Length: 288
Ligand code: NDP
Image (cartoon, rainbow, N blue to C red; front, side, top):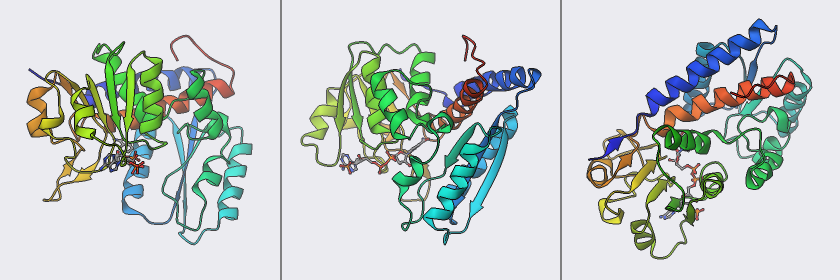
């Protein structure tokens, strides 16, 4: 019988822990601030930014929003990032992606000070993750690792297949699974025999961005299935990359969409912001 991983409940526990840490910092006279930049009027980005601001308010992190018009130039955006990098009272900076086409995403990501890069997208943070010596982990993969930990899912020596190789999810996820001693295979759009590869997996992590891409005939009995996707089905209903209804009965553990990985992403962002605040203030406790 499949265990449905309750991402909402785990995320709530993470947020409570963050709230306590923020309070502890406050008692030492240290405030924690996250600057969120949004360029243009993409509807999904607006929802994500609003959710991040709401989460900040809930845990006591000060959020500053910089909503810039789509016509903002790259130089103007870089100028804002420089100003935020220089401000000692700003602990975390994130620029909601995607940015408009005329702006070089990589230039923006790498302009954010690595010490304030709470998304962990900066090239030095990415390198640190590869070496296993990091301050921040990217929010979605770290959130997934926390779910795996909270549900006591054994990863060591297991066959883990990740579908998707984005810099945000697939690649860092592969690194974290490798650090946890899984045997990792990363699939992408050019992968041959994807079905056979996935069928061999003890743990499947789907980060494809295609509704119901992972079907029951691809899943080994008893596999753990983590669904990162956020899509709309043919009826406009929110769904993941996994054909949940048919896959779920085959699994030992599965994350639903919504209520699985999604809530963990924002909870981890809050945790990363507190870590940035502690690092900036040279205050670090064992239970960071
Ligand atoms: P990207 O579009 O950046 O990457 C998608 C990956 O899927 C690519 O590596 C692509 O391969 C691969 N892919 C596409 N089609 C196929 C195929 N037919 N067979 C095998 N692989 C394929 O997406 P993201 O990683 O940013 O996001 C993935 C999903 O996760 C999206 O639905 C997104 O909305 C969601 N998401 C959810 C988050 C959450 O908090 N729950 C956070 C971040 C993302 P190739 O590289 O060859 O093109």
